[in-house]
Image (cartoon, rainbow, N blue to C red; front, side, top):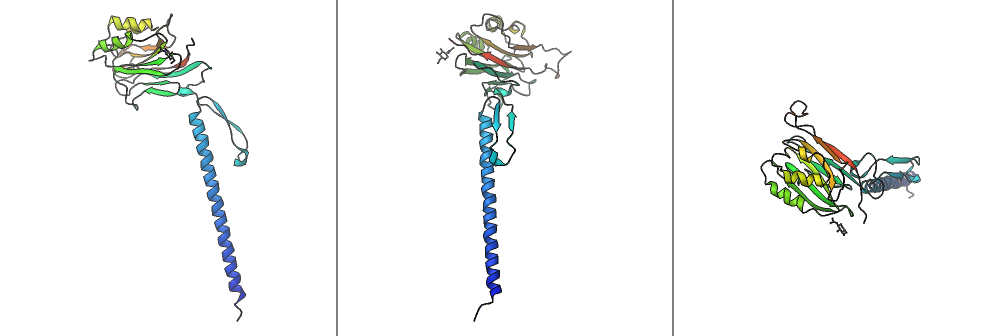
Length: 244
Ligand SMILES: *[C@@H]1O[C@H](CO)[C@@H](O)[C@H](O)[C@H]1NC(C)=O
């Protein structure tokens, strides 16, 4: 007996539909996968890329082939540094609440997240030729031993960049020897540094003149932004690489 064609027909139809659905969902899955891959690639390229870059989206993405400017400079600088310059950004601590941070060539050297900052003076030494970090240390200037900082500063060799950020109180235990060493690194304000001042500085061991990279705010109850502390300071810029 011949089977009713409608059943076979129905069966065929449903079979076809099923196949179609599978094909569609497969396509969707493939597109989703492609999209994820492309997005990941763009993201990685973007986060690894250090300076302003132009990203050209592939034409087949279906997006009008437009050039998208992604402003992303090292250390988040508003403008990328020229070749043979190092980008840096130094933030002092905010009152006694938020620790300071230092970025050099897009690398966070010291920060609360890295858990290597402390109240007092935070100092990082960088090789002025290679840009590689050499030493980092935090010096308690309220209850600590100032000789630790004195020794640290006295051992700095020629061609070293010195990054400094204050936090809470950088001044109570400071002494004339320390002030003099900072002044020799190009600081204009180390001689005035005192209790709860805000200070950010980048200098160099063999600097013959005053460093252009320095900001200083005196602790002054009349003008303090926070109750017992002046405003936090931010310092950013491009420092020329020392070429021998
Ligand atoms: C910086 O690195 C170079 C190359 O490794 C080295 O020759 C130079 O002595 C270093 N400078 C300092 C100040 O350590």
